Image 1 (cartoon, rainbow, N blue to C red):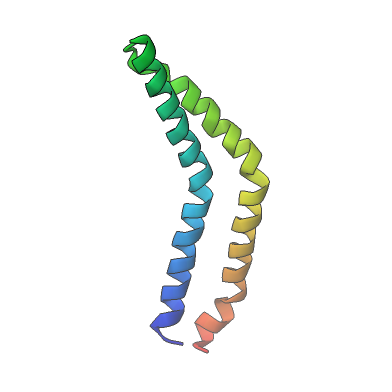
Image 2 (cartoon, rainbow, N blue to C red):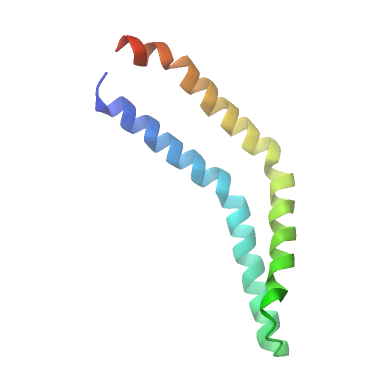
Length: 91
């Protein structure tokens, strides 16, 4: 067991982190663009206007994607736990 094993675990952890964060980040990005367009069209320059829609979109994305996110996180955790003996024994 060399450095490749640890690099693979780190890569998988980063990939899963990006997968879990992407639904909420993309939703907030699109809502931010929509609110910005709305503010540009109506010339309303209220800075606090964008927070509530973004929060609603993030909570909605979290509610919709929660089962998928939980499944991915549980599978990754199970994989890590199953690999503990090979890490300890150095196989």
